[in-house]
Amino acid sequence: MEEEDHIDRWLAEHELPGAVDLEVEGIVDRVNGLQRRLHRMLDETLADFDLSVGEWKALTHLQLDGAPHRKSPGKLAKWADLSSGAMTNRLDRLEEAGLVRRVPDPDDRRGVLVELTDAGRAAWEQSVSAQAEKESLIAAALSAKEKQQLNALLRRLMREFERREQKHS
Image 1 (cartoon, helix red, strand yellow):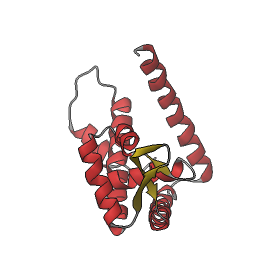
Image 2 (tube, one colour; image 1 turned 180 degrees about the vertical axis):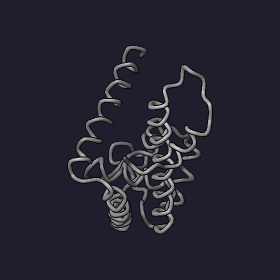
Image 3 (cartoon, helix red, strand yellow; image 1 turned 30 degrees about the vertical axis):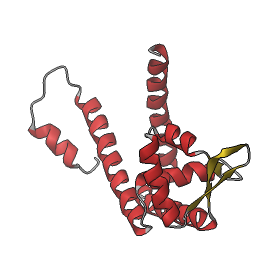
């Protein structure tokens, strides 16, 4: 039998209404707990690079968009669901750190584009590698086959959410 975790102990100690399926409750509580811990781990990793999650996501968006790694501030704000003022503050901070630069938009004389710098690309790559290393250490608790099985089960749950969301959109 598997070793108990704090969720097993909590479920055993508390009486929940009869309609609550304890197996489902265990799944949801564990997924939520893992999510919180992974987010905390990412925050710690990014702190080592003097980045916030929002700043890191902006670098990610520029990097993964492909060469020339440029976007308008408006498109970045829309993607991040931020006001233009909030995005300006985020971009100012990234520009001060030398991770992005604003360049004239060749298609609009009045516009500017935000471009990822070499330092920004390096910070992004190093932070992604550092986080991947931490995640690998955690995932080492599972065998290769167990990782595949877990991915298959989580994929099935994700597909069910996607199906239900499609029905309601």
